[in-house]
Length: 73
Image 1 (cartoon, helix red, strand yellow):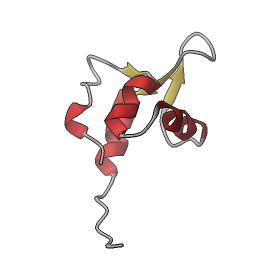
Image 2 (cartoon, helix red, strand yellow; image 1 turned 90 degrees about the vertical axis):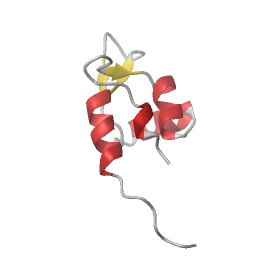
Image 3 (cartoon, rainbow, N blue to C red; image 1 turned 135 degrees about the vertical axis):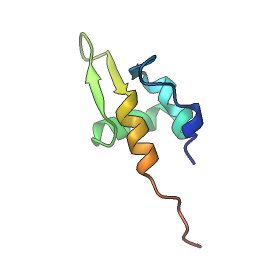
């Protein structure tokens, strides 16, 4: 389950790297890149292809919009 209390303030850290987002979402860095490629995470390109950053404010909105999984297996 995502740790919303661990998300940084978007005013202080407007962009995050995949490595920073991975532990916040509880997934691997590779999964973050898969999510980016699938369009599931809001990103911005800074200075080139190797400078992809996740938009902190949009990530926070996405995480807050998630509903807890209440299904029983």
